[in-house]
Image (cartoon, rainbow, N blue to C red; front, top):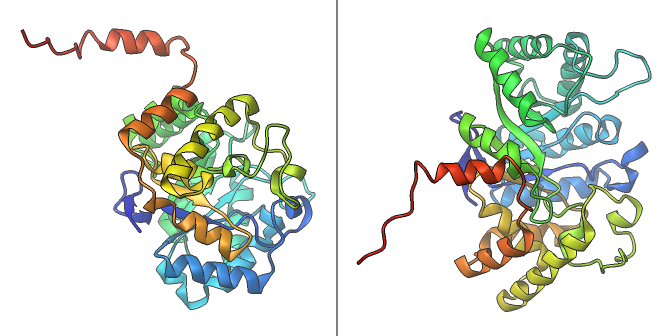
Length: 342
């Protein structure tokens, strides 16, 4: 297992992160997974034995059950992992049990700590943007949590490029701890992140954690162009995240060819492509079975050649958009092509 620096911090995290959205299966989250404690115990032991030191969850997953199950599964191995969770979503019916207000964050962090059975969270992330709460209020509250020792680092998820930059400006202006990472959707069939967000991450030195790297299973190679998949497959009952399916299956066709040549699975090719992207810090993998997890854990062993990367780039490249094509064109003023040998 390889380890990478998380953003500007001195923290090293495994290039694969284990996501626990499949734990519990309560309420809305039944469509994602319904793993009980004993199954979760086995999967957590499997990832730790494989060298993964990075585990991600969220308070809303199965209405808190995912955090509870994960805390029990870690037990005395808590100290061996960089533990990440999130705050934003509704945790009850009352109007203040949702969002990124000081009140909700302070209540949520205490409840997450209790469910996880720990006295600190390594990476506490906002799960998205709250249009009602001033960003300064949110960041001051998170800064206080870092100062208290209950949180080590803070991160964000699902933000637009301008929201990330505004948050960094607020942190810099008021001398607050800043977001060190972004958790975002990114796949070879969904490269929208590259337009505005990737340049921000590279310029501001934020780490990138990738969620749903197989596009909700669509890039596993188990679905046909009509959307049919195996019984119990997640996409059958929960068609998320949104994907241009015609484009996605064009990519899958090329990945199938490469997978056959390498005696690998289509899913491993999709994960390997992400691991070849310099902006990616860690790819979040989930699983319902030990066999599925073992397949994902083997993805870093699949190395793509320059030719294979070029084939995948050709079939998955985003259509050119302004101002991107103009920025690229004008960058040539400063980085001209080398003169050909005479």
